[in-house]
Amino acid sequence: MADTPQVGTPVHELDTPILLLDLNAFERNIGRMAAFFAGKSTVDLRPHAKSHKCPQIARRQIESGAVGITCAKVSEAEVMAEAGIEDILVANEVVGPTKVQRLAELATHCHLMVAVDDAANIDELSSACQKRGASLRVLVEIDIGMARCGVQPGPHALALAQRIVDVPNLTFMGLQGYEGHLVGIVDAQERAAKVCAAMGLLQETKTLLEMRGLPVAIVSGGGTGTYDMSSSVPPMNEIQAGSYVFMDTKYIQVRPEFESSLTVLTTVLSRPTPERIIVDAGMKAMTHEFGWPRPIDVPGTSVVGLSEEHGKLEATEPEAVLLKPGDKTCFMPSHCCTTVNLHDDLYVVRDGVLVDVWPIAARGCAQ
Ligand SMILES: Cc1ncc(COP(=O)(O)O)c(C=O)c1O
Image (cartoon, rainbow, N blue to C red; front, side, top):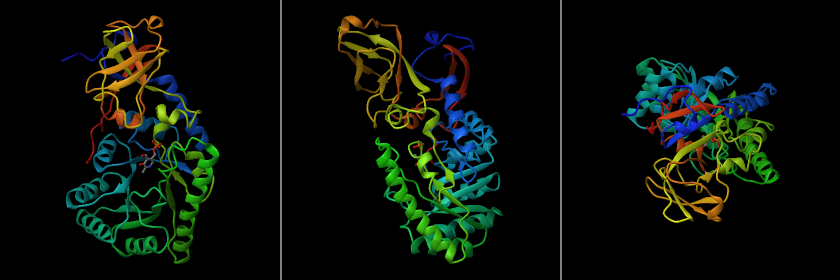
């Protein structure tokens, strides 16, 4: 087993492949998002921890003003609660006896909230919480166009909200509507117009519920691509943005105000031809569902393929590219959230030197 490298080690001496976190860029990202929400009295940030899966980062987000965190899965929420995060939204449906019991147990340890879109699920959550003596806050998830989970806006949501109010140990808190189909639209005007229309669906449903005497305290959703747009029109008042802490090749073109802080450090294994450069990171170190990772310190090269443990780069002007076996080179992930989930640790670097190693403690927490 390799020893954990010493604080103070220069980046180019670290063994690879590893995930590097540029602390300066990361802190600017956290600060920029915190400043945006500090200026908004009616909207809070509840960042999505699925992007980082790292309690050290969740703590920094809360220290800079976030009201709590969002998780995708119960197991992720368990890791965060264990690390002392007190206010957690599981922004997903939690279904079936094993998971529901885990959720009810977790609700006895932290201030927990969950999404629902089904009446039978509300009943199973309620009885599990009754058995544990737990209380659970609940959001009704509305499909505002993404066509994933969520009931259609309007009367279906009303029926579920009423059901939550009627059963013991659950508290109806409001609505969740995630506009995930809009977060990546590059044209900002088009994105804003579509977000505004999607927020209209939430607003109609909120009005309907309130007319029937069901107060809607929280309306939660939003991502890095939409955090400012979704929070500038009613009714969204909690924003779940996650990727802004790291960014990636997909998001960097949508949100230029945030910086790339996450890279994969690799070593050149082979340069079998002048044009072809092979690094020691393939699809087990960098994901590619949003495109190839981008070489960031070697102009004139691009990734043309990933196998399990090899990344293949092509140099368009080979004589200008000096990489040789043993050299280190970095890539910006095309999707930060899934790339993080491939690694055990974040190697935290400031000004080219290792300053800390943060475990990605919820890495692989898919249950
Ligand atoms: C439920 C939910 N909320 C919020 C987000 C936003 O995350 P990001 O900031 O990475 O777009 C996601 C992304 O997948 C999500 O699934």
